[in-house]
Length: 312
Image (cartoon, rainbow, N blue to C red; front, side, top):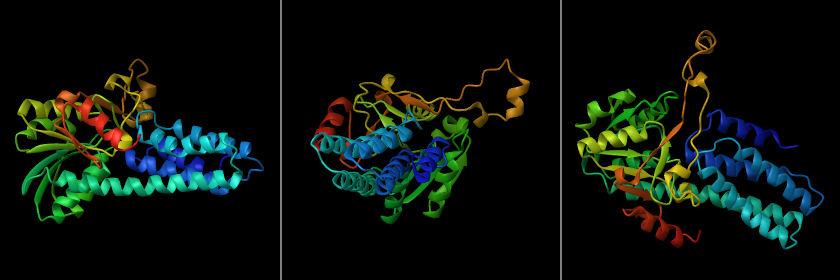
């Protein structure tokens, strides 16, 4: 029987009480670490079974955010190898706990490194448009402010869950001049912007970026006005098995995020579509800021180089 902590974490990820690809990945790793600590197993087989079940519970929560399965794989791959080599319960427990802790620590450091590298892309005075919420994006703003740069932002509210409100609050706390705008005003304000800066939930090997629905429209608006689009993402958001963006599954979420239940009952002939993500083609992306460096087109080559350096 899985622990209450694991089930609670899975539910919070599914319900978007934990949101943002990095936070999801770290939460999953922490849940795996806690599950390993609590697991009462009399044999390696029993312990491995408990951890596989825990991994399965977490993997079912959000299909698009590749950071989650990459975090689970980071933990489970060495566990499975040690299990096949005959390791005992306590050795397996130590592997899970150690790898989970390592993933969380590396994730935090990666976000800080992205902040440093990304801030170099912003001028002393820059106006930046954002979409949704990304800890990597906020890290770039934080570093830019630390360097004394004057940054202002047009922050899209990001319907239907309004993650842009989180970004607006956090940037304002950093001393950034924030303009919160409705999603459909992206093109209207794009002529006042120097660059677009967004995060990513998954990056295909060709540089296609899956991110919160509306990212592609923002990139199209930026292309229309000749503005660069910077993507900030940790390398564990690279979907190693996805050659192109079409390989990344797009999560469809509940209509109740869009309209009240009463509307659904009274309008049964209306199909309410609520895709959570879209995919932006690599041609519309100027660069991808990762902890391994700033990746430039052609992304197929630069992503492969980054992945090989990291020992994936």
